[in-house]
Amino acid sequence: MTLKYETIDHTNDAFLEILEVLHKAIFTPEGEAPWSAENFKNLLDNPVCDCWLFYSGYDPVGLILFTSIVGEIEIITLGVSPTCQGEGLATEMLSQLMKFSKGSSIDNIHLEVRADNAAAIKLYKNAGFHIIGDRPNYYKLANKSMVDALLFTFSFCK
Ligand SMILES: CC(C)(COP(=O)(O)OP(=O)(O)OC[C@H]1O[C@@H](n2cnc3c(N)ncnc32)[C@H](O)[C@@H]1OP(=O)(O)O)[C@@H](O)C(=O)NCCC(=O)NCCS
Image 1 (cartoon, rainbow, N blue to C red):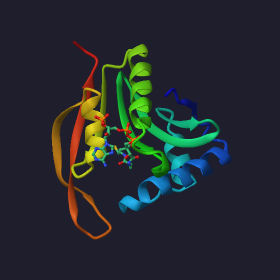
Image 2: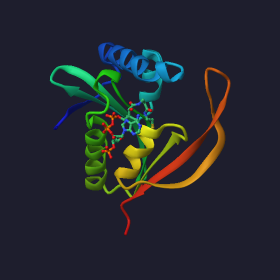
Image 3: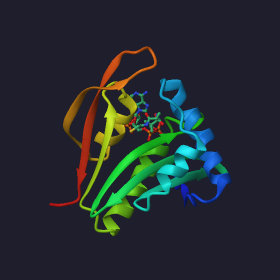
Image 4: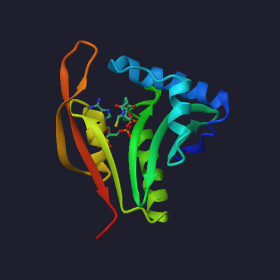
């Protein structure tokens, strides 16, 4: 499947509201705090931060928010609408980010994943990312339990 994406114009409130709704649908069931339109605007006010909104037809189905600084990309968040998960969308979204990175002389892509997030771990391992470390008890869940973060990196350097 080829998904189209649009780079978010953070001065456009309509886009920010779509991100708020999508983020809430994706992350709140996992017990994470939803990000408001204002949270997205504040992040995207930073010129090194970009957000791609992916569409299936006219429906927003996924997002990737990332920073890009001197050859290093960090994925801050990536998610797919719960109604569209398990259909290969995240694999396609990540592949598009990796193609863009390769064409933009990026050396490495970094990210953190909750150690209990089996789907995300599979996604990144399938794409060739490697675990380079962990942060013990990094995430605090709604039930107050703590979960480690795994640090993943993909390197374009041979
Ligand atoms: C993680 C997430 C982005 C995956 O999106 P998706 O579109 O369902 O992923 P894909 O369909 O491309 O599947 C990727 C791989 O994960 C596997 N997978 C999907 N759901 C899984 C699950 N619940 N448990 C284990 N593996 C799973 C798929 O089988 C696939 O591997 P395969 O190609 O070897 O079969 C999605 O579940 C999500 O948005 N989760 C909530 C937000 C989140 O956790 N984001 C990641 C933060 S870094």
